[in-house]
Image 1: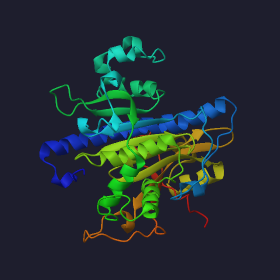
Image 2: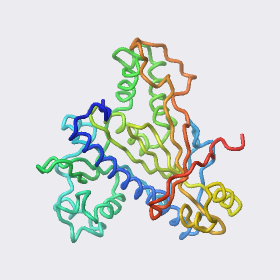
Image 3: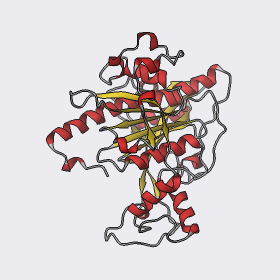
Image 4: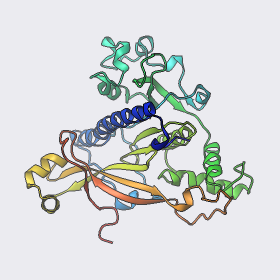
Amino acid sequence: MWIYRERLNYYEKLRRSLYEILRDALEMRLMKISLIDSFYNYLRNGVEYSFLEKRELRPTSKKMEKESELFNTFIVIFCEGIISPELKNYIRFFPENKLVKKNVDYLPNLSLYKNFNQNLRYFDKPAFLDLIEDLLDIDYALLIQQDPTIKKKNRYALTHFHVKIDWPIADAAEDLAVWLRYIQNNLYEKGDKVARILQNKLFEYYGCHHSVGGRRTAGLIAAQLLRKLDFISTVFVSSSESRSMIKYSERSVSKFFLIQLYDSQIGALSQREGMDFETFKNAYLYPANGYYVGISEAVYSHTPYSKPPEDGKLRKLRPAYSWLRLRDEFLHPKSTALTLRPINYKWVYAGE
């Protein structure tokens, strides 16, 4: 289990500060790739973009769209420390998928491969995020972590690509249920029915219905597995069937998605924020055919039923009680509007 900042030593606090700054930069780029770039892919191809319905952002929603090649999909894992080799059986990173020149040579569609060198994979290099974007088309996950091969501390690198997540759902559910004190040791100790419910609750804990597709399943399984380590990690999952980007971190679950806004709504928002109409549009929104789109974030928190009990005692599972609730919603500024903050924009339960 990761350690709270207050319990870190001075150098560990420096590492966490650097990690959080880099994570913010990565998140900003991935939001654009997942949502804005995908949206314009639809427009260029004359295909109608399917915006999320409000009910799709409510915990345990089951509705899904069909997969589309026009939506940019990926899994990116960003670790504060170095993943233990003991986890290689479940997060599969080996010499053959390490980001080195001889492995990159097998990727002819990588636009940067001719100029690839070892330094390009470091987060502090200007072309790092371009490299990430080039590699997102490769199936499975990308792994960013501290580089274990160098002596310099706190230097982050894209160490592996084509990383498979291979931990059984039952094992992940058992791990979570033991931590939450619904079982003592074994997932099936209270019978098959409880075991099945606990597996479904694992998905609910991570903001998904248990019927979701493979990419989102792999992302939440990775997030649960990485909880075993003593540093924080973040998993970004861009999903075509959900038309969203999900972030799993030490701060719980977030979903990023596009909202559709017209002039009347933009006028009300800009007036509320004390901004000029055009200034607001240029700072927060992207033009489309007769309307604008913006990146919104739904932030979730866990309920008392999905937190360890204070007394540490075993407790009874109550399947009807929700494990996740919507905590907040934001509209994000563009990546070019660095002086502006996300603004409150309540949408999921608005009008009810």
